[in-house]
Length: 171
Ligand SMILES: Cc1cc2nc3c(=O)[nH]c(=O)nc-3n(C[C@H](O)[C@H](O)[C@H](O)COP(=O)(O)O)c2cc1C
Image 1 (cartoon, helix red, strand yellow):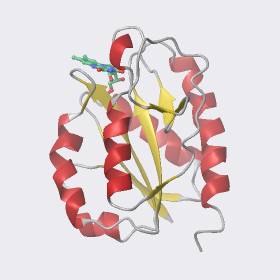
Image 2 (tube, rainbow, N blue to C red):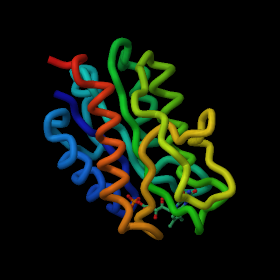
Image 3 (cartoon, rainbow, N blue to C red):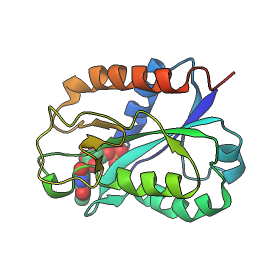
């Protein structure tokens, strides 16, 4: 089983994180705000989901930003990791969900393997996102500000990709 750790500024991500767990009950046993989590708890997981919203000008939430240096004591080699992001495509079109790339880079740096990183950008309107790699978002993207009605379907389709990538790797 795996665990989901998230960052949030005003709490919206908490609800999305709960919906992701509901879509992946076979893979996710626990959902927690990353604030205060012991690095050993992350180290002990075979499968991880990290996510959160983007703030400032393409920045991480304060809780996730504060936690980032702790990743230097975590070895993600051999671990599958999936990412998700919340943002506002119209309000912050020039940096839509860009913070997901900060987490992506850290996971890669620590040896992790990102799964389900080929999420279509179709259905979103924005000028720029750091979170687009080779034409695809590097994780699930939802916009609770402008398209909350699409969130459940987006989670369901990404959860299938995650399950395909992770099933068999976990016992
Ligand atoms: C001051 C402020 C800055 C923001 N900056 C960005 C941004 O750079 N990119 C983006 O996609 N969304 C941005 N957002 C939108 C939030 O990511 C979005 O509202 C999200 O749903 C908040 O989730 P949370 O409550 O879990 O923090 C910003 C929102 C505010 C209020």
